[in-house]
Amino acid sequence: MAFEVLRDLGNRVAEAYGLVFTLPGDLQAIYLKFGIDLARGNGDGTWRLPIPARFVIDRHGIVRAVDADPDYTRRSEPAQTVEILQRLRG
Image 1 (cartoon, rainbow, N blue to C red):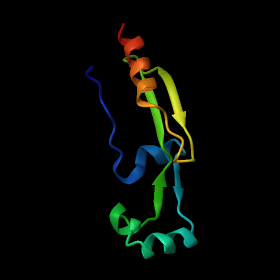
Image 2 (image 1 turned 90 degrees about the horizontal axis):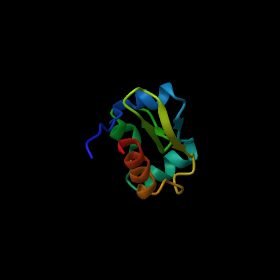
Image 3 (image 1 turned 30 degrees about the horizontal axis):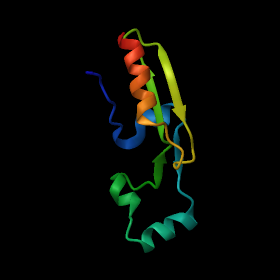
Image 4 (image 1 turned 135 degrees about the vertical axis):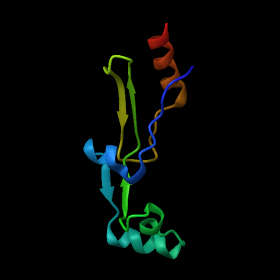
C-alpha cells in the first residue's frame, strides 16, 4: 500500500492537536543522568514530547481512526492500522 506518513519536526502538528507535553523537571534530571539531553535532541531547547498517536485520514480528509494515549506503553497494534487501511482501500 502506498500512503503518506507525517514526520512532525518540532512537534508543530502535535501541538496544534494538543498532543504535546513538557517533561517535568524531575524527569528531565533523570534523562540527563542517562545522557539523554532531550532539549538538545529536539533542537529547540524544549523538553517537549508528543503523545503517541495514530490518525488514519482518507483521501477526502475524513478521519477514519484515531488512537492517542498519553501512556507511551499502550500503543496500537500495527495490524490494527493495516486492517483499517485495507478496509479503506477495498
